Length: 432
Image (cartoon, rainbow, N blue to C red; front, side, top):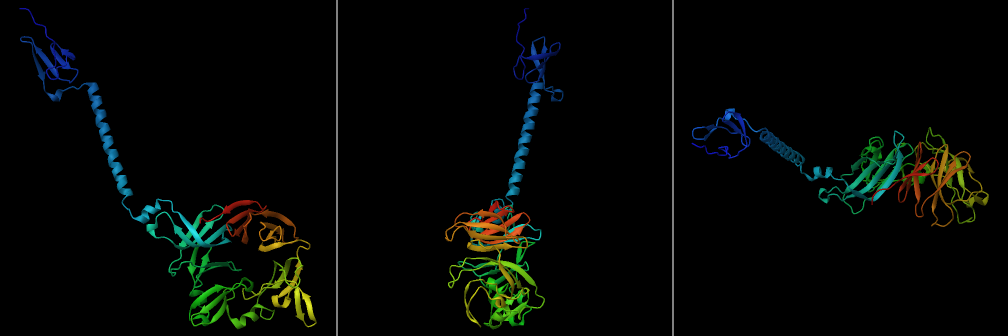
């Protein structure tokens, strides 16, 4: 009987691709099924015993890769979910604001440069800050902020709390001769500035605790005129006008103040002698007299009341009749004075800084009030001009401190860091 030839197919997947394991026993290369041929009727029998099942190597590798990829994707999704949950665990406006750049502008601010205990220049600014990053946080208010002038980095900031709401607050900063800095807010609150920790402390009540005449409390506080020394003008709650000098810890009535700040008889015990500079002022009696830079020595009053020396050519009534006079030595406690730079012309001059070595002044090239300002550095002993630096028109300079590498000057528009050679190292500006 003739045999009928048939293609041997896998009984499971019908694939003809197979491997012969032994005579009439095969393994499907596609699905891995093992089967054998029955020669009597050419039946195909397949084995479902999965415990002995052998998989196709290519099919097995592909399955493992798919399985690992699925596990990796699942882990990634789980970690992403956990990360988002942690980030959003604190969704308060304050917390969210920390991740944003905090932006604000200054208004109605006052600035004062000083030297910190590490002998580095710092600027303290006080005024009103207006925030633009998130108005809902309501952080607008009065602040005191300290800046490293050289890097512009903020060193510390403190909001001034418990002050009455006003459309416009007033702020005054002053450094006394003993190095202490005081801040007055709205003529009612007195703060002392901490130069080391960059904070302020309310001393409105404690600063006067040693004075029985101030037990009723302070209704109003202001700095005395600069010409009268480092003092405070006070109005007590019971209506008395008094003058307090913290360095000397002395208090005076308005009647007693004039005698306390003039003449040699009222000089406090232990006071010394100091030398400084000032410019003479033009007068109506002798309008053609030129402004002079005066170097003078006087009796210091050890932090008590004083009257800054003034020099002006004028007609004065003396025991000998009317005479041309330049100053009043007894009134200003003068010991000596002299023209420091004879023959030089000065227009709109201002004394910015002086020590035993250097003298820094601001001047204009002409008598015009619109003339640009220049800064000039002089040797404090010889009067020699060390440098002259010009500034833009409209920039006026008011205060200055010296540090080891130069000077920091406060202008009406911005602050400047000058090297010891007079070149501008840096400009410091607050955002408005």
